[in-house]
Length: 316
Ligand SMILES: [Zn+2]
Ligand SMILES: [Zn+2]
Image (cartoon, rainbow, N blue to C red; front, side, top):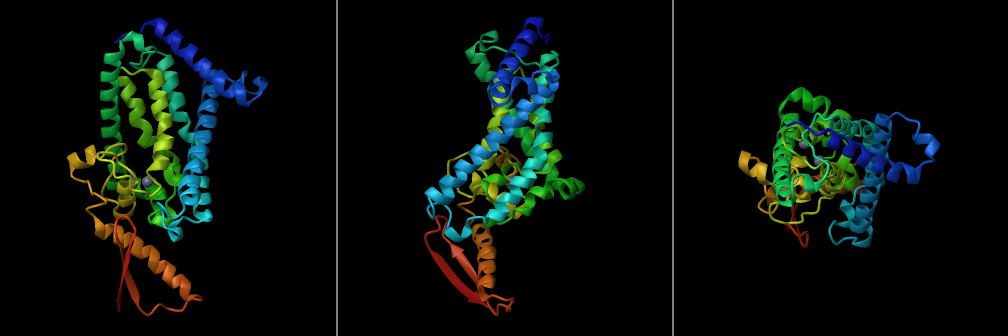
């Protein structure tokens, strides 16, 4: 599809407007206006990404760990401040690199290389919705397989994806783990968003919004709270991914996992849920013994899915 040159000017007008809104309201003009266009865009993506990460992370943590203390997450399963700071450090190290991806997509779109269009009325609302649905299915499929290969191809797991999987217990996962990836891992998992632009006619601003919504969504799926909303890949599913490493690779929905046979439902999966919490509580038990005294017996703590009762089965 040939991109009309008028489209390209509209993309540039739009992205100039976004730069003026974000950079213009946060930084003195003399600091960002002289930068080449590519770096202005990068800076806007970087600042936007950092703001979204901290605002969504802090609000979500405030809500589930403080305001609704003990409602969603048991008090002793709240991740430590140190664990959250480590996740923030990993995410902040990667953020400059993550920001390069939307910057590149924007450059390619403004150059007329993608199949993006700038205005809804270029295609009409119904066609917009149809293209959006196809784009979302493509992204879901792409992220599923990218994530799965990051596990299946051993060097990719060892050198990239393992950084994210050190958070493998409930009390180490927090909304801040959502962007705590090796930079290349984070980019690879977001790359279907950009590849889709070359295949599916996509409204460019919708693409940008979806990409940034990822930051909010990924905070949400790392909070360990099972929303139990059918078809949505909530934190209950993603927590299982962090403990079994072989299930629930999907992103927004459980569709791809269901189709490709890797779905594991948190409510039908009491064992995993329990083992997950057992590990945590055994650690607590050992901590309580103090000064390295070896724990002579172990306990199985079985939790109901809603965490309302606990059953303790000692064994030797
Ligand atoms: Zn993974
Ligand atoms: Zn994760």
